Image 1: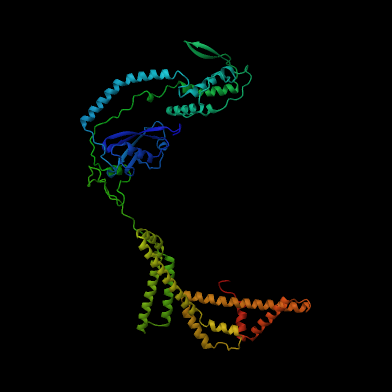
Image 2: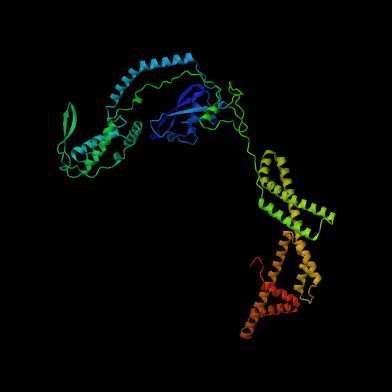
Length: 547
């Protein structure tokens, strides 16, 4: 503890057991430190979590500071303590009887009256003897500054270093003076730390003479009409602070005998309903924590005590539901159902109505299952790790094997689903790819073929995954066709530049480009007219997503 930190005496009142005691903590401590000190000092050693410290009707939190609790130095450092009956680790303080309380009060009062005059006189004599040397006083620094200011006021110059005896360990003496002023309720004046202005002509300024009145030395002003110099003005400001400090007697608390605890007799029920008292004060009631049971170590614990209120039940857990995903899936299901009902009437075909109802129930259960699968997937990392810690090494190994088997099964199911979606989305694409690559003359698709393809694709692409796969395959094919058309155009431009530059300047690379251009042009020219029209549309038309 540094010299600046001050120990504070806090009086703790325990009204439920007519008991009071004093704890001593640092001024920079928190309320939690005060509770720990109470647990060490108080009879019964109450646990920290069962204590409630109340100041002016307000429950103090553990993180509040002791220095911030009392705003004024004149406030009494007293806190009221309320202890939950289950927080006592041993027998709490006993209730004093009326006869014992009266006798103890009378004996304490008489002893204090008999010992107070002797101790007060002795302490006064000891204080007068101890304050005579300058070095032993806590205000030695203030006294030295006082003498220095008087010398400056009389002479108009700073005193020589040898005129005043230097204090040993001046910084420590200053800290002691700061603490002594705090006991008076004052703060350290900033003027005492300021430097004196430079001295002027000694003949200028005020002049004082030392005179004796009634055997006491005084200073008498010789030239009342003179103007004080800046250094004398500074000395007067210093003296305006040092005079009250040195003339004030020491606090009487230092001369009092050691504090005596007083006990007053009044009847208190040990099982007072504290919650009713807290309710009258407008404070929340004291409750047991969730799952907490009364402490069986306390001998006088009453299971029917009204203070043992049950703790609040655990709050109901509300699981989050992905509203957007569920709503979107249900909307798509409604659209598909309306489309099927438009073409097929369930009233005329009961068997189709049964199949449609079963399909709607299956799709709805798929939406609900998606929610449960998402929750199970979110809980799997935490639950799996906790279960692995509880189980032994052998069970942990079996769990890892089961998880790997589950992952392999899920990957196999995903591959199968991907293959099915690719097969459905690639309808007629392989035949069209062969027509584009071979360049053989093929008749254009007939009207019946177009109608069949349109109806099949319309039904298949109702599933979003099939539509995504189909769109990705078409974009890959049209991207290849656009690249081929760009290559043909570039080759044609290179061939025209080679022909205009002359045969001598043509390089080997230009000849290779010309050969490639001729090969691509020949393949493109062999294609049917309707295929060329399709390629032209691919080059000139953009996708709806790119527009």
